[in-house]
Amino acid sequence: MLAVADLSFAYSRGGEELFGGLSHEFVPGAVTAVTGPSGRGKSTLLYVLGLMLTPTRGQVLLSGQEVSSAADAVRSRVRAHRIGFVFQDAALDPTRTVLDSVVEPALYAGWRLGRARERGRVLLEQMGVGARADHRPGEVSGGQAQRVAVCRALVTDPVVVLADEPTGNLDRDNAQGVLRALSAAAGGHGTHGEGDGMPRTVVVATHDPFVLEHADEVLAL
Image (cartoon, rainbow, N blue to C red; front, side, top):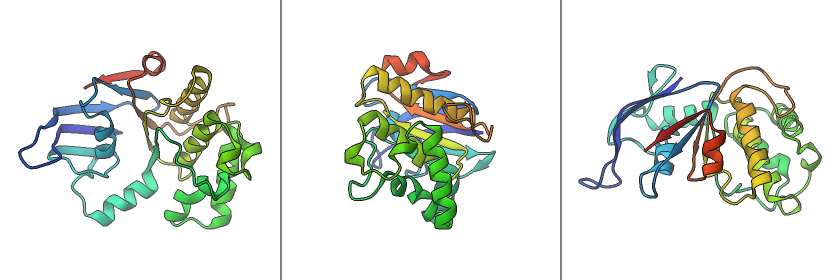
């Protein structure tokens, strides 16, 4: 369970506070869309949830434990092992293969290369891009690249997946494919029904009405 309690954030001392004391429990097994006008802090909330920013006030709780004020080493360990990230730009290294990009978080988390590569290939197959594993990012489409980014977010079996405008650069067909992949990840499955069955908490920051229509829950800031 991912939750926030009395959460506020300001980028500078005395600056404008975002979130206004937000308290919310994010539903495991569901895709929650975070929406609101520009400037309300959708992306900032993801960075706070992902322990990359520290709240000015309040708490981020993961499995009932307060993690937002933990020491840097603890926060880094939680990010590496329990949180996956998907960004608007798939941000794949153009000099490396798709599979190498997918396994990078697992290696950072201390996995052995063989185990990481095996897990990466399974995820790529589940997301329908297994045939692209040994290709460079310039040889895959935008929609395929975002599905690869979802695989990268899932490679360490995180309990939380945070996605920042993951459909922002995609047409509707590709956006639907990425949303299907995120929904499958929330339910612990691949896009073809395979998987470990472990529900995950998926939070998507978006201004896209199409995403809001397909989300299980909506949190308006």
